[in-house]
Length: 125
Image (cartoon, rainbow, N blue to C red; front, side, top):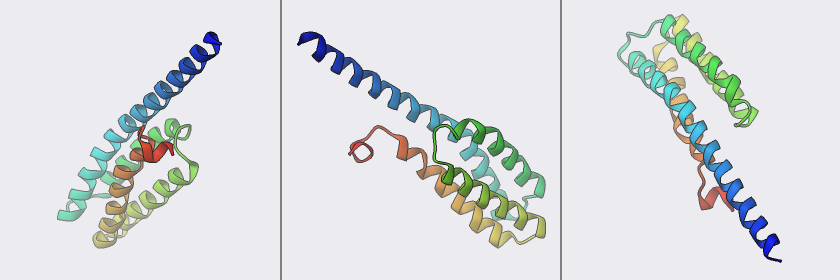
């Protein structure tokens, strides 16, 4: 009986630590990307963004999404790809207002998506 209780608590502790590690890893992966997105957003806002700026953010995202595919749903990855592709294409055509709108959506997703992996009561129950 004691072994069973100890095994249950050890398993629960292991799962809690696993969830905590996953949440920290996902948050850490999004920090660099979020910084690059904020930089791109401010450049688009003041009209100094170039297509190279957009492409560098896209390159950073492509490198990180290979790792994040394991942790976040594929729909979220595809949504990030979609909005980032639209923002970069608007930069190519010089439509800064539309690019700014897409960049704002990307920033919002980057701020909210890692929060879905925090160990919190609303994510557990």
